[in-house]
Image 1 (cartoon, helix red, strand yellow):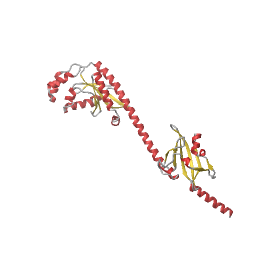
Image 2 (cartoon, one colour):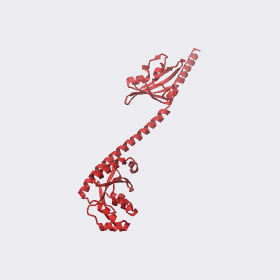
Image 3 (cartoon, rainbow, N blue to C red):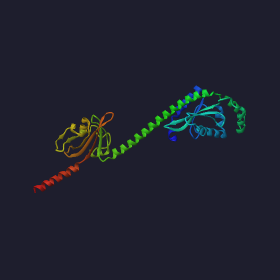
Image 4 (tube, rainbow, N blue to C red):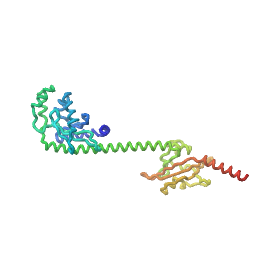
Length: 320
């Protein structure tokens, strides 16, 4: 959950929010994952940027503070305030999306009281920092009252809520799109491999979609240019008894006009050479943004010929 969700956070937007927070309050911020990777940040103070994060030993302390100390949040706490291993105050605000704690938003690099300069002198000596420059950086770190820090953190809590909501909306949209793509793929496979001819027409009778089998049954090529939009206008239809069938009698027309399923209608397509292709047709209305009709049909010409031949044989046998 953590890795996947972090991919969907809009860090360009987060950077803008953190910079705005820094300019408004003076508090520095950072968005850090559980491995200590800084994914987004505002301007940092010199003591962290130029000293603690540059020295491998103090950087290790930073990572421990970011990943271990920050997690020691008591039950019911909305944020956790602690002194990092390099001597500055940090506040961790959890980023929670769909109930999962995926990262922390930090503010800090300040003191609650005047710093112990002897501690930082010893730290400069221990890690080989230029004492004068290091102590100057310590003096630049603001001393902030707990009340002021609390107000800044409340602002951050609102910000983390915004980040969480934006990310959750994005993940839900992506999940929906994946589900739609999955369904579209299933539909495409079924549509193109179904053994029946399928056409989808709009309310005016224009064919807007068809499958390969429809082209084969109707002896048409499977492309938009050669598959006629107004298919029925180019064909003559007959009833099973050979009498002409009006276009309004077609299964698709009945389904559209009566808003109901029309099943197993036998229709003949009469060609210029007087041959007839016989179809068994079922049509049903689709109530989408506009009313459409899906029509399925199978070629029963050979079946009809077999039935006719059997009937003729029976008649000859009966007469004989």
